[in-house]
Amino acid sequence: MADTLSNFIGGTWVPAATDRALDVLNPATGKVLAKVPLSTANDVERAVTVARNAFETWRRVPPLQRARYLFRYKELLESNFDDLARILTEEHGKTLDEARGSVRRGIENVEHACGIPTLMMGDTVEDVAAGIDCETVRQPIGVFAAVTPFNFPAMVPLWFWPYAVATGNTFIVKPSEQVPLVQQRMFELVERAGFPAGVLNLVHGDREVVEALVDHEDIAGLSFVGSSPVAKALYARGAAKGKRMQALGGAKNHIVVMPDADMDKSIPTVFESCMGCAGQRCLAGSVVVAVGDAYDRVVEGVLAEAKKMVVGNGLEPGVTLGPVISAAHRDRVMSYIASGVQEGATLLLDGRTVEVRDEPDGNWVGPTVFTDVTDDMKIAKEEIFGPVMMIRRAETLDDAIAMIRKSPFANATSLFTSSGKAAREFRYSVGVSMIGINIGVAAPMAFFPFGGTKNSFYGDTKAHGKDSIRFFTDQKAVITRWF
Image 1 (cartoon, rainbow, N blue to C red):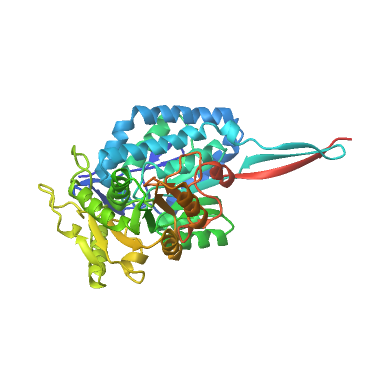
Image 2 (cartoon, rainbow, N blue to C red):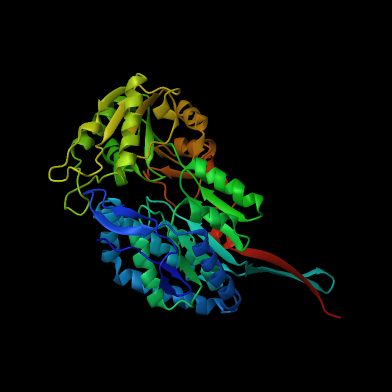
């Protein structure tokens, strides 16, 4: 019988106050890996209480000393790197290379947060008036929480809590109930790093836990990554209670390929952007817009790349496309493919027929490619979150930009070109927050902000980089005169 996971509250592992639990399934095999408890509002109350009590002591720990806990944690992440990647692949389905890449990006955020003595520095101006000086200081606020998604279960929590605790706050993580195992392992490493009791807490669960966190009067702010409808609802609910909220939502990312692009280098990168991680990433390409004469070469090149893909269990060598997260999500992706066919798009490559020998219970969807897609089609407007790409034609760069600006999402976009003029016009006019130039996945490094606009982001302050320091601190101005 599979073991039931525990919560980490107040520096100890404790069972959730519930009999309800879900099976955690390997999406490639269908096998049960563990059971995750569906914690209650009482579990949240317990975590908030210990985090609130720990805050007053933790905020007084000098930033340099707080950073030393993060240095120890980073060392533990490095020494357990392969173990974390393997757990991530087993519960999520990513290939091992994809899992390693996401764990690495998470570690980079811990590394960046180690610089908190510099990152928290304020400003000072003498003699703002005769004999009067003014300075700003950044202070922690209290207890924060994060509700994180299934698609990057190791990386996304590290977008938030390292910055929060480095600045002197305490924290509660609620991982996706679909992929709790890698976060469980990472909190075992939190325990080994020696963080004081109550500074970091882990509560498993579903909607009840999320609502309890966003409603609790002692939660100062909440970070969320997930679908746009949930992001919008949580943002409104938390903001109405006066909380700081950053809610990262969905995407419909366009990649533009100009006729002057280096096709031999561009097309493999474009294809990987759309198909990597089985399309289950908020920065995945979804719509490839080929400008002018680029269209035929892009179609031909994409189909050639698709033939190279090996679908299977991400733990197996040579596999380049793993399963989607669940049977329900597989059916959802397939319903979008059926919708595209019904609405008149041309299905050049149908991923619904893919099979993986020896793994009949996996959640398989093969690479899928549409052409002849129009603005009014469901597949053109909505986020699919699977290995499905559309190739559309635009006559000019201006037409491509206009197509992108029509989208209700504005998370990421990319342009492939050899023209500096085209690149400047694109970044100047496209109206999307994360932009790649000859980059397929426009993912900012830890020291830059991460987040979109329009329906892709709700809030003012984005994830990681300097924005995280702003989100997790209150900037105070102190005006001084001595008689």
